[in-house]
Length: 147
Image 1 (cartoon, one colour):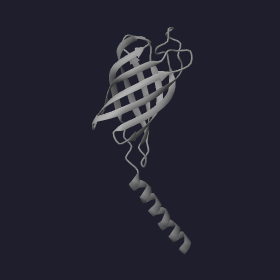
Image 2 (cartoon, helix red, strand yellow):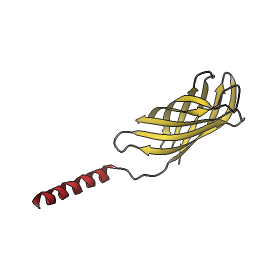
Image 3 (cartoon, helix red, strand yellow):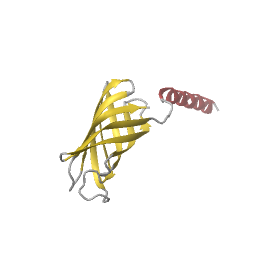
Image 4 (cartoon, one colour):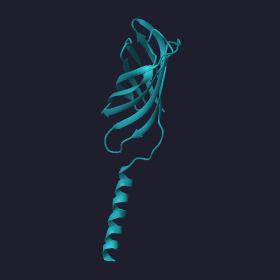
């Protein structure tokens, strides 16, 4: 009986420590507005990101992102991991899309790389590069607003 009492006390303490170090889950949405360039062809465009997961101890987040130029020349949908150190964010992801391809409508596997620098608490300048096999590289540069 004494063992059960001690075990219960330790279990309650462990749960309390985990709860104290965890952050409340809340969905964050970020909107990027900027310029896409693919092989010298450019267009204004946007990206929307939804935070899926945030680690409580290290500055790592996982997001789902959809990006597209406004001229109707493709899209990209990716799952991105973002690591923040100070005001600088580095990240990368994988996904699918037809952004920058000569034949639209044929979604293919792609990768993206991310670098961002914070300008204010909810504002950053961000650059993205989309690469994949048998496709030109697409670059996005713009401002990111986190709501």
